[in-house]
Figure (cartoon, rainbow, N blue to C red):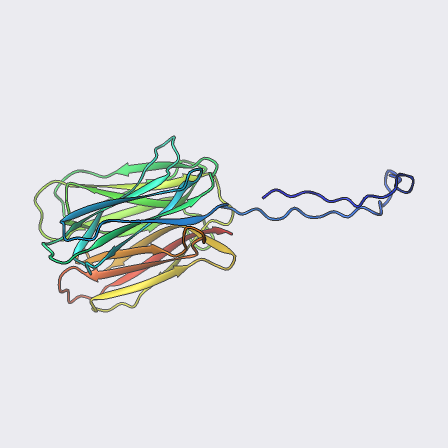
Length: 300
């Protein structure tokens, strides 16, 4: 939003500018603050509801807007479905405009379920691009990789993609760096095999990056640590801030717990301000575990 400096008009004979003298009759109106991420909204798209082993859905930003953050939600599976792809489009020289979420059943599951993709969209941000970092391809139980923004850019959102596992690997960590006083610049993604799996597979991390965004920081909230089957935790932005991106971190689950929800609030007409992460044990698991939710936020 652009502002104008207002000047009270005074008859010409009474307005005399004298070098070094105080000028009376001129009232300066400060420029109103501009939003760090103008036009911010949350768009959603939901898949068909059935018992097929795999489904995919893409949430696309409205014309004229770009993708700055992501989210997803699996409904009806309660830990029996694994998000395999959480992929923003775009590239190292192209601003992203959509996110695709793909999910597989971890084991045969007779119930109907859906997957929802969430796109956090805004008016174009300067320097917006999507960068990626692919890990090794092998049959190890754990894979990890970090996507970092180019020097001078900050990270507004992120994504990941598992190739070759088709529901046999679970993302355990989807962790943006940064803090409540430091802008995030990278995301680290870690995944474990849910069951013993002999085929090769790989993991890719995606970072959505832009020129510095006013007030960009990372907030976090953590759940209780115990052995109950499920838990949910919400990370909220600070006062006067809006949500641009999301993340989560599982501690103690090591492939036995599935993050079912990574749900930003808001709507197609309301800017998001928080994200709720939810997780279920994929099979009965006696160990204690907790879930951390991350909210990447900027000045409203």
